[in-house]
Length: 290
Image (cartoon, rainbow, N blue to C red; front, side, top):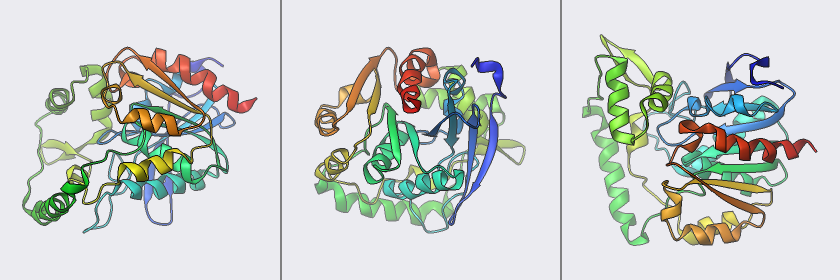
C-alpha cells in the first residue's frame, strides 16, 4: 500500500480510568498494530516523518502524560519513570488491542522495554530507537536527588514558565537546547506549544524537568531486560547517546532475541532522516503478520 492511500494522521483521544491521553494515528485500521511512544519533552509528532513510511502498520503514537495534548498528573504528583508504564498499557486497552507491537524513542524506548518485560503474552515485537531501559544514577546520590526533587516541587508555584513572542522564537530556543535541525524541531514544537496571552508557552508539564526522586538500580533494570521474550530491535544513532554508554552492553546481553543496528545520525534518527529507520522497521513489524 502506498503512503498516500490514507489520511496523513488522525487525532484520537483515549479515555483511560485515570487520565485522558491524546494520540496521532496513521495507517489502515486493520494494519499491524504498533503503539509508539516518544521521548522526554517530545510528543506524538516525533513519528510524523516515520509513520507514513510504514504502510503496513496501524501506528498509534501516544502523547505521554504531561506531554503534548494529554492530561497532566494531579497536583503534588511526580513523573516517575515507572508511572508511565501503566499509562501505556491503559492506552493499548483503550484501543482494544490484546496483542500488539511496541515502538519507542529515547524515554519511550525505555518505557516500551519495560512494558514488553511485564506483558510478554501481549507483546508481539518491540522496537526501540536510542532508548533501552531508564537512566540510572549512583545509589550514593539518592538522598541528594530526593531532597532536590522536593525542593523543586515546593518552588514550582514561584516559577514563571518561559513565554515566547512567536512560534519561530520557540523553535529557535528548542533548536539551541537540543541540537535538532530546524525542520525536525518545528515538527515537535508545533504540537508542543499553546497560546499564552500575546505569546506562546510549552504544553509540557514543568514537573517533567524535575530530577527523579528515585532511580532504579542497574541490577533492577537488568532483571527487566531478562524478561523480554518478544523479538526486539534496537536502533542507535552513531552519534547518539547509547553507543557512548558502556553499561548498555550488559542490557543488550540480557535480551534473548535482540538485534542492534547502528545508523548514521544522532539521537533522533527517525525524525531527522526517517528512511533508514523505516527500512529496518517495516520488515521487522511486517513479520508480525506472517
